[in-house]
Image 1 (tube, rainbow, N blue to C red):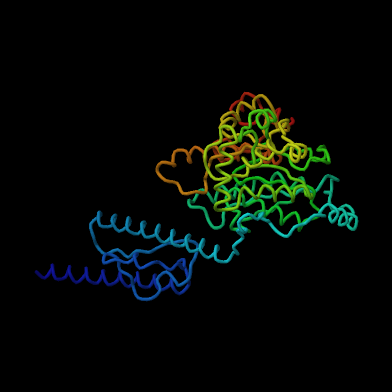
Image 2: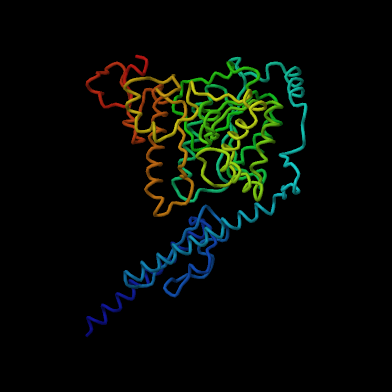
Length: 457
């Protein structure tokens, strides 16, 4: 009996000591702000969760919902039920946060819907932009050229406002930006990255129009703007786009084929995710014409029906910029055909399923610098939505996209790393190995992703 009382007393003392240590650690984390500060909804607290008094997780929003649960003794299944409840509460909280951000953004932007029957305007009407630009260049000689004497170019890209709906999306966007920097920096190509929606009537496919217009008017020194979707990746890091070879009357360059656009009225005869557009009066007028298909609401819905009826193979959905460009070229060739050049000599766009599985074959047969089907300038992940919410149904397709995007990144990255004596072990891993140029033996590197002849040795 005495021994049992002694054991109980020792247990109580150990229990009190554990509680004291826990409270001490908790106090230190609060005192020195070691825990992220996130306000959590009341659903996070239940009878099975113990919350000590005071702001355990702080008072302000930090990077995301995190929690510290102080579990009362319970069965394993009870703890699992608690976790499921917390995960559900976190998802509800995220959804409410996104809805609130969207609501606040919409309230802060003016309603730009034009009155019925009137033409939509992207901004104040301008009719003498070519003269204004010419006057600017006269006053600032050489401002429209790079240090190499080539036309000044600005690459424009961007992504949705706020964070992606999954963790891998933000990582891929960061790698995509790094890839564009690797290509543009050696060529003195400026980069403008936008997460803003400048006009709430111009969202989705159309967000680029008000952005490009504003950049044109604020950068009179830039000759060409290069729009590039965030899901497009440079995969030939040595090919230079021949801007200087395009005729003065060419104001827009897109990947496409005349036979598909003019011959078949195929809405997929060109790709509007990547294109070059000259800083000119024609471009301002063209974007104004194009915008009539994209005003959110009845105008965009009606445009979708019109494009569905008058273009071949196009599915039924709201008006999009790619179909609208094809329609303008087909039905108004006198105004647009002369000024829009469909480029097929090099690949401004290559559809990812047709190329990502062939990278090793291309590396065996060819080398960077072609920019065409032998070594595509850009691999475009059309249809992949790595930034969107990944459900059970979308998981397999998204996983395939992510894996092939990683291959494309590594395929391009090898061309940068080799200048410093490194390369990826293979295209499916981020792991890099050092290249020993002096002791290279072909038999030892048969499985390497880059053949030595491609390194210029």
